[in-house]
Structures are given as C-alpha cells and as structure tokens.
Length: 400
Image 1 (tube, one colour):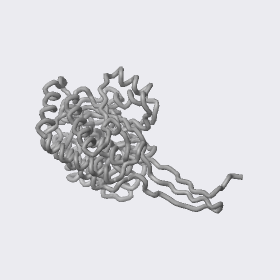
Image 2 (tube, rainbow, N blue to C red; image 1 turned 90 degrees about the vertical axis):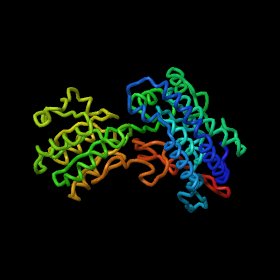
Image 3 (cartoon, rainbow, N blue to C red; image 1 turned 45 degrees about the vertical axis):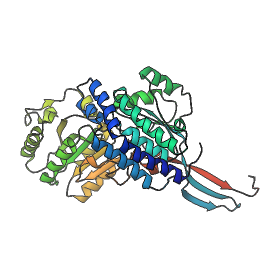
Image 4 (spheres, rainbow, N blue to C red; image 1 turned 30 degrees about the vertical axis):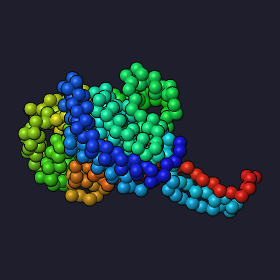
C-alpha cells in the first residue's frame, strides 16, 4: 500500500471536518430514516443509533483530534549496529487493510475510519443494517474529502453492504487481503467473527465489568461511583454490571440495603444470589451461572457478597469480560494486590469504570477497547493502529 505524506492525510481530514459541518442536516435526515425503521425494544441499541447535532460535533472533534496528532507511521522504535556491521532499525508500519464490523453506532464510521486512514491503513466498514442510511451518508462524506485531495476513495475507505450469510462468506473467503478484523459489539457478534475469520481478529467491546467495595472502602464515595458507573450510559461497554460488597465492611447489612435503595430509585433492576436474598427481597435470585458472565447493557445489576479481596479477585477473573474492574478501598496494599492480580484491560482504585475510553484516558479517538492481550490491550488509538517492520542495512554481509 502506498505511503501517504502526513501533509496529504491531514488535508483530507481537514476537508472532512468542513464537509461534516456542511452536511449536518443531511446526516441527521439520513439518521432519521434509520430511526423510523428501527423495530426493536433494545433501548441501548437505539441510543447508540441516534445521531444528533451533539454527535456530529463529536465526530468533527474526533477528526480534528486525530489530525492534530503526530503521524504514527515510520517512527523509529529502536536502532542498533551489530559487530558484523549490519545496522538494524525497527520502525512502525501500517497494518494494511483493517476490517471493522460493528453494530448500530454510525459515529464508528467516522472514528474508525479517521484512525485507520491517519495510520495509512485501508479500512473496510461493515455496519449493521439498522444504521444503513446513516452509514451511507457518512461514507459519502469520506469519499468527497478523499476526492478533493486527489485520492481514490475506494482505495482507502469502503462501506460494505452484506447480510449475515454474505458476511460469513466474506470472512471465510475474503476477495482481497485482510490484515486485521476488529468486531465491535456483543458476544454473539464477536463469536461469529472469531468462528469465521481467516485472519487475525482483535477482540473488543465486551464489558461485564465488576466493582468490589473493600471493608476499608469509603462507603459514600462507593455509592457515587457505583451510580455513575451503572447509570451514566447503560449502552457503553465500560458500564458496571456486577457489584461485590465485602462481608467484613462495618454495617454490611445496612449498606447492602442502602445500595439497593439508591439503585432502585434510579430504576435499576437488581439480581442477587441466595446468600443475600433475605436482605434484598426485591431482587431476582440468579438461577443460572451464565448470568455472571453476562454483559447487561441495561438498567440491571448484580449485588453479591465477597468474603475478602482474594474472593473478589477470583470471581472477577472467572466471570468478567476482561474489560474494566474497580476496587473501592483506602488500603493501598489491598488496592495494589487487586490491581496487579485482576486480569482486565483497565483496573481502577476509587474511580468509575466509565473512564475506560480513549478520550478520557488521553489517547484521543479510539477504534475500540481491546480486551485481547496480543498487540495491545485497552483503548485502540492512533498509536496502536500500526505494526512494526525491521529495516536492515548492510554492505555485502553474508551469514556464515
């Protein structure tokens, strides 16, 4: 793939900022067609589908932030000269072609493409059918920006319109070389991609996040953090699902009841196990272990007791999606143990899981939140959308 100069890439992005601003009304109009056709009771998916003026502002800001970041391609990672005279440099390089498969959110059509393009990758976008009109309009904006700057649109950003069967066949027998696939969505989508793809798949997007209140935790602070993590944005992968309360916390029973009351006031449906059923008569008893593995994406949460920090860590590592986990405690040693031993992309002390986000973490616009351990874990920003290549300079050396 041809390497573009940073100047031409930034000019494309500058054009895109202007075009998104000029096309506001037509973008909202296209989104209205998707909203009118949406036929589901899934409130979280509906919320992700909406594109309003604030969302367009966010798209423009995302493009601007990426444009202002340094080009990630060709950066020198290491350099050494060997005894035989070979000079070896390790530099960043584009992946090549990245395919992203996502559900509902039209803003991904902007955020994913801008990152991939600035990192000199070609991107194939496979959005959900529920966002068809929105995505087509946003692709049109991308193509206009590319053409304005003398680039072939199809060579850089392309929206794919395929049904499930066609997508499956595309993954199994891609008509062009794919270097990386990033599925953004629920467990079913991720499993579908992993089961069918022939190239590398970077898993992202699944939450099922836990929060543990240690016996040395500040209870008032814990309540504020839990409410924020659970109710601020239920459709986000960094939203809270499971809450573990240390049995040794002073006033355990009263605190459990207070937490249930606070969440109930915010219409959060509660689930619990047999141990706490007597304290939480309004909660549904968990009948199947699968609930512990579930990401809710709804006003729903599990409240359960933990014997101690080791019990909490074990349960989190067994059931969580490896996305985010938080401990509420004043005990620095407990916090360090929790953060070192919990196997998640982001671990917190005394803070909401809602901060697992590229913008909030200072990465800028993100392609996804990776829960994989290979290549990168956490927000996939511009710096993470490159691979590496070795440049070896010699003057006739041969291996003996």
